[in-house]
Length: 314
Image 1: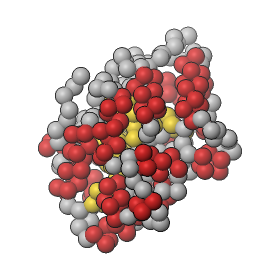
Image 2: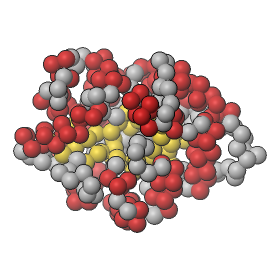
Image 3: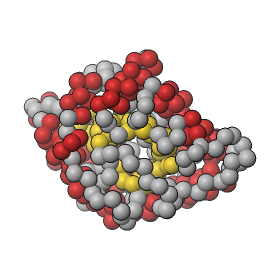
């Protein structure tokens, strides 16, 4: 019988490198095409590939298939919803994939969002997502699992935005994955978690120099997230107000959340997150056709990795 694992700040922090890719496009392409793209991301030198869970592929099967096509790349869930499966099932999936691909699977767990939970999982979101997460982690760590144990301890991060969830991410995982956040949040997150936890923000980008075109693409992406209170409440904590959040978002908010322009401008935004305390930035590329893999853009982004400066290891 495998013994219980309780990750925490003392656990080994994964070395993901400064730059990764966050992609929903892989979910909507045939798996053979997605695997071929993942293999190329591995060859290009990206440290991690992050995949979501929403209304497309089941994340554990997806991750295992993508990992089977790569040699070095870490594949992470960004995030697997705790409302989609019991804590015992989440624990079993985590350990199964971790054993098959030692040290290359990073489980991201989150409470998701009330509208998504109620629409997709027929569940009750509850008034206290922090308490929900604590109880779920307790049940995960106490769950029985008789399968083969991984030679490398399984690792997890939590989706976190507010200070309590960020501190929990450092205490009950190896760190936090943040999403739909400006650079200023990365500094807040680092201060909340302390120096020893992994911080991996997602940064959405548009490789388009025309401001009107780039902001239009950004707003098509942003509108679904501006309808989710977890994200807007987080932005309000940072000082963003109704003038920024109402409608499709102000130009100032668009520019803070979605980096657009030249490759140099994108690199500067990634570096700003690293300077603010991030260990790893996973870049999500927007294109005019959301069904198409942004292979050309990924190849361009790979070239910025050598210039990125990361914070000293702790």
